[in-house]
Length: 406
Length: 170
Ligand code: FES
Image (spheres, chains in turn yellow, brown):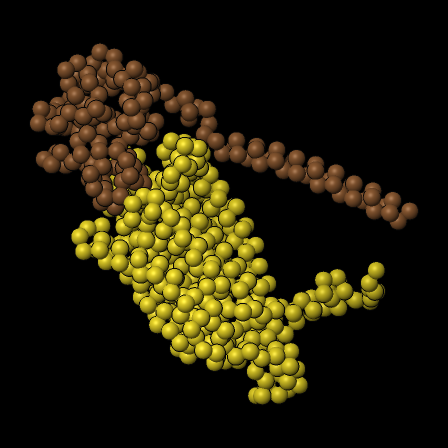
């Protein structure tokens, strides 16, 4: 057994150290967790995401106390009880709704920063993969949460998305009915999505966040130049007081102060939306109670799913499903499709710099087309953009292979 | 002696592994069954629709197993189809009113004799055949039985069985 000091006062530093190794923990997790110096504010998105997730968790717990997972009660428990009876219930709902929408904006920024600077490449593949797993789980979390107010969009989005599982022979196995627990989205559907949204998926997300942080520990955070250097050597310099010469800074308190500054700006924007523009995250159609006998004239998902929804649309059913499925998982393949040896910002690489911007613009176009009604010229633009999306992925290994070593 | 312990350990390992796998399979099966539709849902019964008062080219929407059912009495100028449900001397379209693409409810444009699905632009004619857009198959016909001027949904009558054998509906 370890040595315990009889004279240590309960809960003193020494007492805690002997039982919990608090000093070691603090060192490993914060004061000697080294961060490269040359990274810009875009690297703060990770902490911004963690903070937003925290807000979603707290507001979610508050909503959970009054929400009723029952097809007859759900709509009113949200739109009447929580919104007008519960003290400050509206606040939690607005935070939760805005948070769910904004979290995707930050996730997309976080992803594209990673793509731009090559942070998914050699040595950091697992960071990218665990991050993509988080993205997919967040998508499932957002979708299951969207069902809960049981409005028209909840119902019909549930109908359309679960029907995706009726592709080809899957239908024959009764998979759709099995997922719904009914022939159409009903009570069983609502209660199981409630379970997923408040328990199972959040648990998975928390586990994945821990994994995502863990994958960072050994390869360390990338930097603006994609420069590779010896973190231990740099850390020794820093600890020896040569702060200027060292290429790293400790996460806490030095880098964290930058994170906190970025978060400060972010939360001004966030709470501006919560208090003055919450409606941007709430579709007006979802303020009509669910009705299984009336489809709203135009069905579209929340903005963050529009690009992949649009990829589904221009094709026939089975082809559309395959295209959609590929679009969902293709980003997982990024570290393996990018054949270039360079870890560098896109601007210094060969054709990849065009690839990056074309991909970004293409996804924005898909997002707009997904929102517009499926008619005339919009159909054509959507089809071209969807085809371009796949063409880009096919081109990726070829153009990165051609890239010269920097 | 050393070999002996190793053998025992291997045996214990395999026994433990075996029991765990068995328990795991049992648990997975129980979970699968928990997600199955409840018996009360499955027994959601039958719906009887009286079509004697139906008007030509006016769409009626009924509900069966939570799904909307289109009932459309065909007028003389609409072409007859193998999929029509014949009640007395009248021809009807009886179909599940969910687009075969992803399940939105198409709207009926009475003047064009067409169903239009707003979701992804799919279109069906008055006999339920897909004529435009992504839907892969005609509107599904629910199991039905004709009884006088009534149509019972949920029961497979001889007309329905014939249609099914002819591959006219899934
Ligand atoms: S659901 Fe009708 S066209 Fe897609």
